[in-house]
Image 1 (cartoon, rainbow, N blue to C red):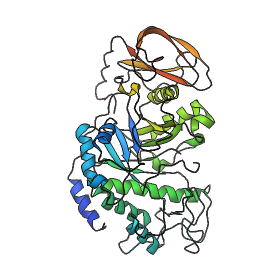
Image 2 (image 1 turned 45 degrees about the vertical axis):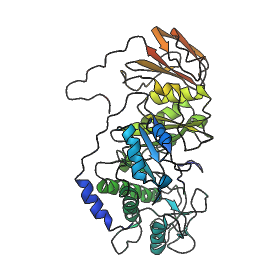
Image 3 (image 1 turned 135 degrees about the vertical axis):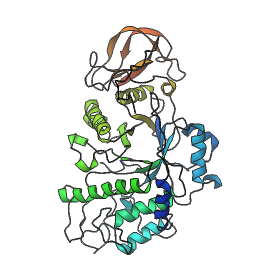
Image 4 (image 1 turned 120 degrees about the vertical axis):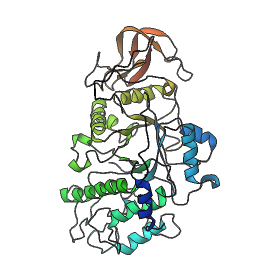
Length: 446
């Protein structure tokens, strides 16, 4: 993972954790109905955190799954964060809202930092990652932002309560993020790597391990496995997702402990950045990673397929959205200018494709173009490197009628379409199909 390829946030007493968990045990799992396609997700952890703005709340509520930023005692516009979350859910009761969490780096100076109590405990227990033991300065964060790397593994000294670093961090987030905001649907943990990004003494035995050392990877993996296990215990009925962008990169295998560890996650910048898989390895490599990640997460598979770009580059957006529609993730377009703030909306988002009538395709449909069928329409994507292609639809379909790219979305009835290189399109059926019935004992979707 290259520098900068990570979601970043903007700027309580642990005794309460047991009480929080006890109350939560009584709560039933929140009902969630997977929405029809296209499924829209969002990452809004940047900007000024103006979650109290009614117009912003209305925009956020158009998304089905979203990640918001938070820090202890945040009160947007003087309102409580939980009241803002409840306002979004009042508009869209089926929306899932996650708060950003990060266990792998922090600033070392607590000062007046909102995370001061966490930093103070890490300082006191020397839970930073050091080159050797606890000697010298902590290993700098791989972000290069002036922070230090936390040894977020179970191989750290236990405090007076018997907690190692990752236990304490998990309980701290539950007390400081979940307790004041019980309306959230879970946490989003950034940087769920399968191997460290820096060298350090992960086992506190005087041995500095490189990021490529399997023993270093094992230590880090044990930490994330513990985070998700404990978060589930302390937040029963909630979902837990993470940044899974590095999973399966370059055809790498996934640690066995990571299978079904999360309920979903973010595939960050799949398209649009210098480090995007599609850019340096091609469309097929991107889709291989996408499909593998979907198979690695547990139901209801809350995966966000994230793309960066210019919101007026409609062809690139269609290409990304259509690629996402080949499987079951939630699509998110991040504006280069706005970064992770605001909601960018496209005509295609308002289309009612319904539910899939075919599984995620595993091969091209015609002339290298991929297709997936839905009850109300179809999605086509022409991969990078395939050149312009004209395909026959074997029937009449209707282009959506939009206001943004009217040369494409003009409402015309067509029997064939021409797709440019790196292009995609959504077409509607003249008559919707009937949703096929599931065999006895099975459920479609979800």
